[in-house]
Length: 83
Image (cartoon, rainbow, N blue to C red; front, side, top):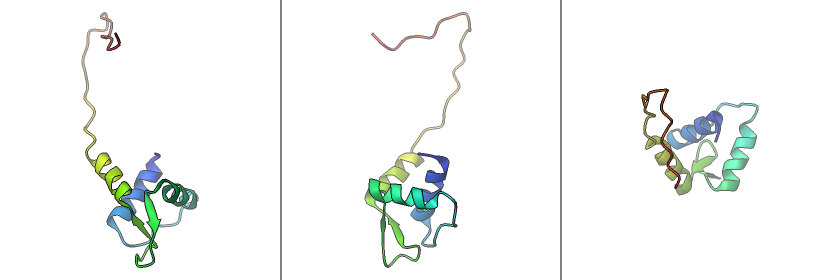
């Protein structure tokens, strides 16, 4: 998912208004429709509504924890998590 995709998804999640035109908006909307993230909707001012799947995706984005910085001695090798 690109930053543009995230921006479009969040726009339709919070706003009933059409998204401002961009060169790749049509491709993004088609991808979202095919993937079940948004659906065309006659009653929505924008013409689209976020589906429950799209809503869950927004929730997952919002629940993503902040990255952490791990300090280590550069002379040591990082621990391996594989067996």
